[in-house]
Length: 211
Image 1 (cartoon, rainbow, N blue to C red):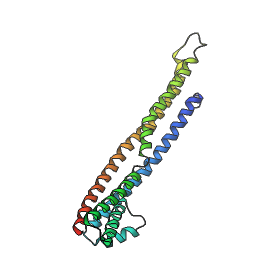
Image 2: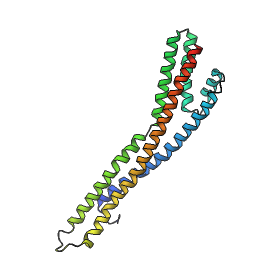
Image 3: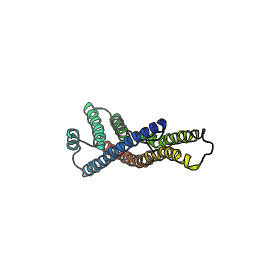
Image 4: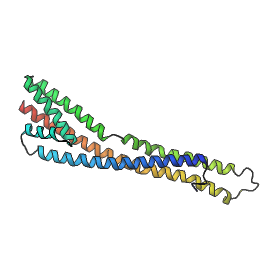
């Protein structure tokens, strides 16, 4: 049925196949990235709340080659805090600078975690319409082929319609996994963002007591 479809319908099918392959590639990449981010966040929080020396923790975090997102947020805040304390800045200026550094690092990390999620949302919302376009075009061709036929039967129209409906099926095949993955990963990123924000507030309180 794919081979006998019109060129336009075949082009639609190829496009949907490419979109589906791209979305599955991004689904697996994002799944591994979020699992890794959650594992590293858990590990860093466990180490942080053990109550060890912050300077030693900062040194380990800055020297780690594959540190997690929360480690980088912590390092950005503690670096600014230490720098302003050495300069003799006021407590308010020191805390404001540390919070802004952590917020900037937090935003970069969240942007990295959200990368390509918009693409999954686009595939999920556009693919059914692309498939519908291919189906409509195929059905139009099927009925146009009956112009020279004096008596049309279902057997003459059915093959063309069946070929056209494959485009709709491929559109749904590309859209459903992308929508499910987008909703799931958006929820996971929101959970991590909440954990990061909570850590920023708690770490700010610790720095304020030290200052």
